[in-house]
Length: 498
Image (cartoon, rainbow, N blue to C red):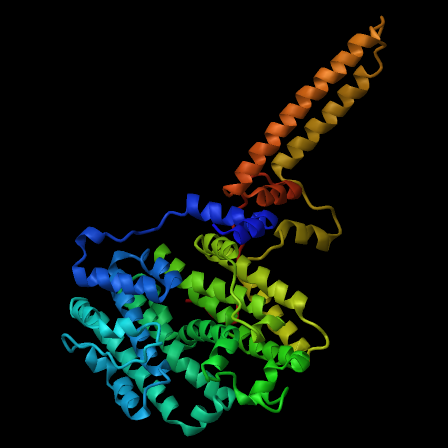
């Protein structure tokens, strides 16, 4: 750990706690068995680790049925994306590669060494024969899904690159922006859903909800586009639609001028607003995932996306550098998003409220952003109501909220103890006590109490560092319900049922 990290975590003890929790308590649902892997498959997983450490971790914890197909699916799309992003490659060479990449998957021994030397994933294409070698070993149904998505994505990327206006001015309209995100991310959501359903690890109804699949991909892609604006500008790429940025500045480059900071922040707010429109559908999609490792695989990126949106919202640093969530915050999000849908909803609620708090009336989209945040909270509330139904009924009747059986018993004991205290307080005390003995008794008692308090604080701190949820315990105590309540009935939503 670097000295700067030590200083940072000294003042951010909560993030250090999250890292400790993740290292100590996280147990993968499934683990890779490297002893049973072929040499080419091990090389594939090595490339997976090099291309994306975050995605690699969640992929390698997937159910064995989906582990290899999804790992190969990711590498295939990463190879396709490397060709599409290579600005040193002529369109005449790039176009046929993109459009025929799905056929390349079945060409034994195929590889490509024509990518520019600066492309970070160039080596993946150089050794792509390892991917094709393993691709032919997976089930035919999985191969067909991966080939189909690769063909659609390759054609979409080729169409985008063939568009002269897009090459010069970037994305023009919001419709063009959505279409591009569909090709590079929405199709990924479609392919993954088909793999989940084919493996019988997700609700089959998800296959009939293409808009939910689309939102899962678009929410991630749009968030990354907002975050990576400075990096894309340096690479001479523009993905923010002109229909949005032209409302705030005359030229795209003006967003990066210090004198235009207010206009740039308002523009980024409108981009965040566009992305927030997919959040509630992502939560609805997650409700259809039955197997825990598949749920974790889908939930972690979505939770990271909502946290990233909060980080970039009205943040001027976005136009200066590539901002990222800290390691401690990442571990805390991963710990929470690998539990259940309720906890994922709480993560969305938390960061949505932070976005709403940072929203300012000076922003032209202030009202729309507030409505978008409210829509997310309303959807979460419809699934997991926060109010106690008994308290609501009592409030409507104008009566105090009824106590639980345990609360009533505690109240009776407290009343009895009070009566006993009053009764004994009337007994006179005879005799005298040596003042010196009294002082010694006070000192000893103080020392004992201080020692007990110190030990208790140390124990509480250690328990908190490794994950004890005292906040939940205090909430239940304040409600007078120290025991777990029965789940409350959910309200009906506008999304229907899976």
